[in-house]
Amino acid sequence: MQKRKAFTHFIEVSFAILIFTISILTSLSAIDIKTSFSSHRLVTTGISLAEVLRNTYKLEKIFSSPEEFQTEIEYYVPKNMYYGIEITGAPKFVIKVGCANCSGRAYLFLKSLLTPVYYNNRWVNFTVEIFDFTSISDAREFDSIIFVNFSNFDNNPLIQEYLSKGGRLIAINDINSTIFSNMDETFALSLSAGASTYLNFSSYPQNPKIAKYFIASGFDVAATNAINGKKNGKWKIWGNAKDVNITSSLQVEIEGVGALKEGDVFCLNGNSENPSLPNENFCFKIRKVFPELLFIQPLNSSFPFLDFSDSVKVRGSEKEGNILSSHSQSYSLVIINKTSSRAVWISYFPQSSEYRALLKGVIMAMNTEFIMKTFLGSEGIEIPIFYETCCDIPETVKILLKLGYKY
Image (cartoon, rainbow, N blue to C red; front, side):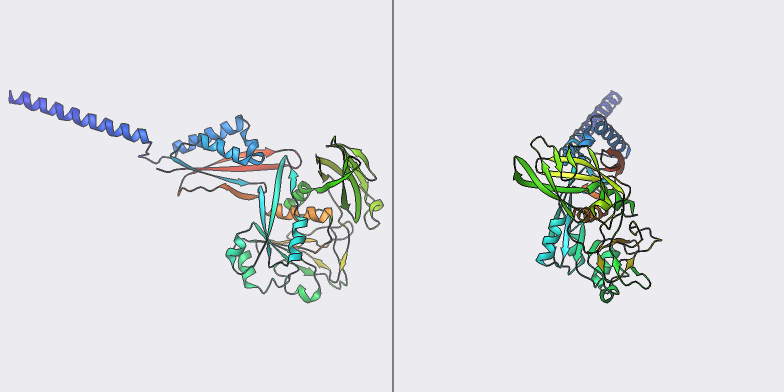
């Protein structure tokens, strides 16, 4: 009898333990706590999300509607996971430019140059802000910093530290023999032997990124003056200011060219436009037309910049492949010093469409990696998603989706 009671007690205790164990597991499951931080579920979640975004054409919203794109991702990511998004291969939506120690005049100069860019069905905008460069943290607030008419770069320890830590710096200034020695190392400049004049001209940069984004930027023409039911503006190209009209039906009328519509191509003879240019035809595309704004895209494999002079001839390192070539000689307009991170020198230039496009192309090329959403986890997995944008320039965007557990 006692044995039977003992056995019955054993069964009751075992059953109680079983009920307790089941209740604990049920509770853990209900709040989705991971007892084993395996990467398997992270990987399957990431792959599934990538497929959903691709198959439902949600990737197209990365640039057209970034907030909506992020909302789509948040809908599918489990609540117990952190996620982050990094973009590589395309410029940021808004590029923040710092005007280092700038005067009011230099600030207005930059503002007039950094107008919005529209390409591949997306906008790239620029903000410009004056700041006093007194510490590295000051400059870190910006995607790129620009010095206008400043020359003492080589002997400035703060600038050298900023560059050594991956800073992105652009200098816009003329060069003469007096200031040359204070910036030649920072920008990999070298004097041409026996040079008495500096010819500031070029074609597309040999640096492929700048070349691509020079084309992507193109020439923007603001047409805000109302004349005879049309919106009128000026296209300043090769020293000429051509009248441009945009009609109510978004047809474009360019002085000396005729009536065009979006997508049409036209050509201009360089020598006819300016005697210093080669006797070649250079073609352009009417890329995008808005009621008061027009974007014109250069199409040639080379594009001549107008010559203008200074006192010293300067060239870049041909070994680095960073010089610009004119139609007649090889001297530099833009120089990228790869040894000191991202230091770019552009000679000071008169305001025109081609130089405005060049500066924007340089800045865009400098800022083709950015964080769309910061990943807050300490560890996790990464799922790459590739997306090709269309249709003005070839551009493959890499979306790096990071996933990790919160708990």
